[in-house]
Image (cartoon, rainbow, N blue to C red):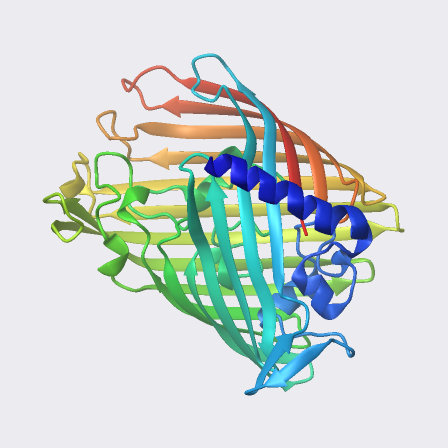
Length: 433
């Protein structure tokens, strides 16, 4: 019954927003600045340099004739600042026995509240329904503030709950803001790996102070974050009954990047660092309150990254992203590990080419190697090598139809069992309006 209602809502939204208005059916931020979607997205949802600056400036840029009601020092849009996104996998096929053979009409239905609030503040919040659990979650809630200190220099801060990428326009902490592919195998493994901690958690909460300097070229950020749900830890360490995010220590985060505008694109390079602890706890009873802390695992992450976006005329758009990173977690022996320290290092490379902003190809290499892992560990993985390619067609603004193929090989440590190769082919429909 619930799925039928959601499908009905989806059809209604398509009928009201997509069909009659076509080129006007764009997300609320584009309506706010009254610019085409490509002002912020070379190929949606990849952020351009202007898109990154728009995010750092707390989504406060507006069109000179933006219609609004000024009340109680707030800017209330006359058009509701809502957007929606639908991701559908009409067909997904994996190797028999791999556990990925499936077919799902809808993968996610997302609703967004995204708007400027007043001259120096903006908001972003998302709600998502997933057929896997048939529940509605709130992946991200974000309040952002900014203040222009001079021409080309802006400072601000962000308070967020949920995905850590909410604070970072450069995708250094595992978000999908700039991803062109779909599925877990398309996420950089080095941004989602770990034994007691995961950036990709709706349980995170954080605060980041950041800004653009030197004529909007230098981006710098420093912040603190805690959380993650204990259900993020591997099976057997804890479960969703454990309120880890309520007891976690605060961690520290720093980011620096150079964002150089080119005549027909931009080039960026930078580094990010994360240092802190993740508290893993054991459930001692049938209620969430009945838990016992059993370890404060020390977490460290370090990354360097670079990207290039380049337009050749109006018809040819090219982008490449590269990411190198490593991580280490210690004090894991109370969790049943035979050693006290685990390490990993990996790389991610993604390149895309689009013709006339309608036809494109995306390819990525996703590799990670683990160290000091024992065959008796709960996840005795030695390395993971992933390859992905996708053909994309964009019939309308913010609308994609894609054919994607992924090949992921997981090598286990000696004595842990046979290696695994997962081959997945999926058809994707991705629409935002």
